[in-house]
Length: 148
Image (tube, rainbow, N blue to C red; front, side):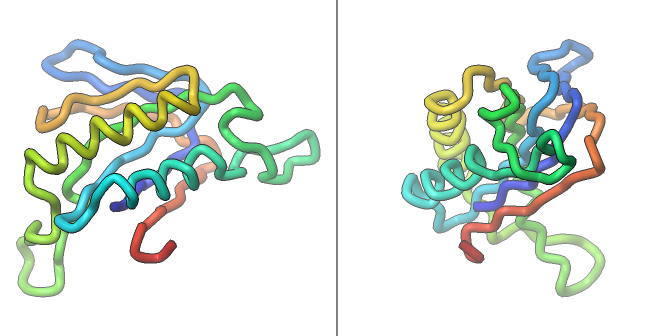
């Protein structure tokens, strides 16, 4: 599982011209799910996500977590985080989880985040989404379950 995390001052996601999820200060998280991922992997990444201290304190140091700043989450499913570009110019996606499995784990991640964060917005699995954001910093972090 991979979480591409962007600290934002605001972000939104639209489907067919309609905004379906929107946050203010917080984290936009692109969620990639691999073939072998399960609930244990998701639990580990969610714990790390909600505890990440990547917001600035009064001294300008990245020392505060999402809860410390009353931050919000916007979670977007993103199978392309598992693109394999090693051969040729067309990415392969064989390492990404099957749609059924990925959708179920995406819902699981959303539910787990809602246990820890008061405002959790979401995209629509499998939809053609338009994501807008203002990256704060910019500050972008990749969490990869293979590296934790």
